[in-house]
Image 1 (cartoon, rainbow, N blue to C red):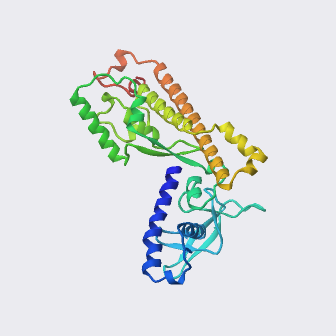
Image 2 (tube, helix red, strand yellow):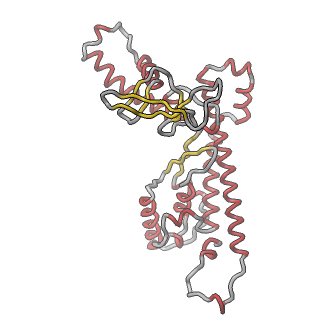
Image 3 (tube, one colour):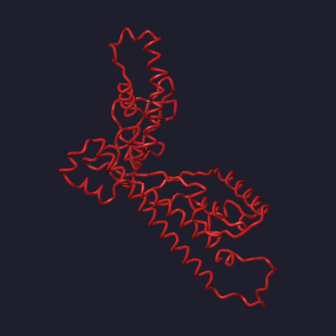
Length: 326
């Protein structure tokens, strides 16, 4: 979040220098404005006000409205565009769930906006873990750290395997490093397919391997490596916080300490507490995933095998049960 905040500040500084300063110095507006009236802090404040009162139906098509709308991922109202570029407008429609008496009229954004976006661009957040997401960056090095002993392979085999991996990365529009959005209710859809690809062994990276095949475990060894790598990355993110989740909860639960916090500090403590809860929930879901996969693999391996007379197959043609159970 600090990096995103610093990036946002750099963008606004660039706009201030290239637009506001140019208008003041070269556009003849400097004589009409008091000295120092339009500082960088003034510009950031103005941007915040405009952002709080604007609806974007497209990146270059904002509509200013006479009320400060607050966005929520599960807002009670939807906003729709009407009119045209010469006379734009917006219509507010109630969503499926009725507005509760005394509740705030919140808007469901056209594109997802969670606490990380709201905190940077709108200056507020929701004290709800369901409205919180955080980004987890995984790299090839993170994945390799959980791969274990991959065995010895010749240079030609390594080159062929890397070619298959690169082709599948491109086909799925994946990169390395890769950023995954963590939420409280589910794991990112692509995180295990990506890890399976990055951690797959040489014999698994064949020309027959497809993107759809990565949706399921390739083998027990590769799946365990993927789980280990993901848990290690989540643990590193948790360890990067200076305060524990218990300390943050104590700060927010204590009326005396809460009142002594500056508004920005209270937002920061709330946000980092919610992020830690998302990370802890992610760990739980990963462990649940591995427990389920382990049971499924155990069931596959415990099935009785057909006799050689009835179930003879071609030499070298492994069944799905054999492949997953390795």
